[in-house]
Length: 337
Length: 255
Image (cartoon, rainbow over all chains, first blue to last red; front, top):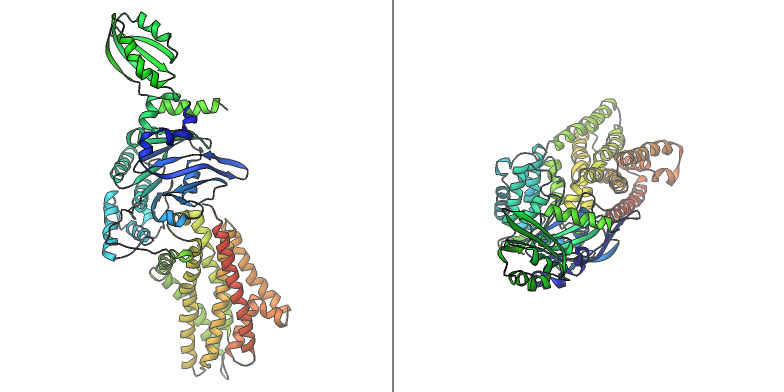
């Protein structure tokens, strides 16, 4: 089964997800603009307390999907729920429990950072004033803007505005934080800070964020979905995604001894899809790609160890680089059209 | 929700959700900044200047009512249009409308906050502050009009100005650029003035300029009072219609 195929049935297949209730769930969500489909029926499931990376190249439809979830745009087909509430009819109730950072956060120029946070907080809390002020101060502290708190927002740098955006997004202690490209406009230090803030917030909230910065995803996400041209091409826990490239798992073995016989026996197995051998420090290293992961886990190591001519020095699932997986899936989906 | 128990959560108020916070922002944006001083200065210069001029020329009898028809009516309408034309379009263009709409705010509350902001800001300065100051000046000069008649005239002016506020807000939801939102109400004022000169009867009274003129008549009392009431009632209906139109259109807006 390909990852594109897995995207649909993932919820049922994934035991980790099965345990956590879905915060976001979409079924065939479609959005068209003047006849052009920006989203082509996506089925997305975001488990509670996950840091869910929503990946895709520019123009893939990530921001469109986010806007639909928030009620900032209306779907033209399919359905979706957030906290079990329908996005079409219960949008305001959803937004009460959500914090949102736009791709390019905007504030009223005249407001200071503190006033912008106070203003945001007032949509959720009527008081007491001291508690709101404390919350505003906490949010400023969280994103490192305490020393800029009383500057007008128009005087803030791009990175500072982004951090203020994160602060206002979580001012209401949201159950779900939706961040649209939270680190796109930041320098490496700013990116690191934002990722640290996300890691801190995950204890209390589910984080759903879109990005095209793959390094960030690999560092903080536990689950990911890849969107390309409005179609979901993959959705899986990141460990699974990195260890099963293109829908097939791969294993690596470092051996000592003559590997020729092992190689011949493996090539005869119906569950092996590809095999390559390289030499490293005089030892053969086998890369075994498999069609059937369950069969491989049951027989692979046993088959190799049954050969008295070799000793297994290392064995494990091959972990791919996310960039390779991403490019492979996106290009694979395009070639498959 | 993981919210601290010490907080008092905002209750969902349906189509008014978020109105209080948005209106506080609008009021603070006017009265809490130098905007109010700038407007107070400008309107005082215009309206009281016209009144002083009328008083200076009124050697015998009551002074003219140019300060109502021109100062409060025509200039007031033009000022209201200039001030409110960017209220919706500006926020849509800058992205702040999308920011607000990502909060638990109803679309209707956003429109109503803008309208009530105009009411509590510019309208208050033009009609309540300047109107009161003008009444005091007239009284001091020995030309005190009947309080009820004067109040009726001020109410008519207020409705006249609110009509243009509602028109600008409605147009702001229909267009994405400022040009037409500014131009259409300005043309309505100018065309109204021209047509008013060439029309008679109820047709003339129903024009924006006609309404302004009727409010002037009201300040002198007499039979025009009934006309003021009738025309004002029609304008109130128009204002409500424009606001409903703005809300319906804005509810369909995608960000």
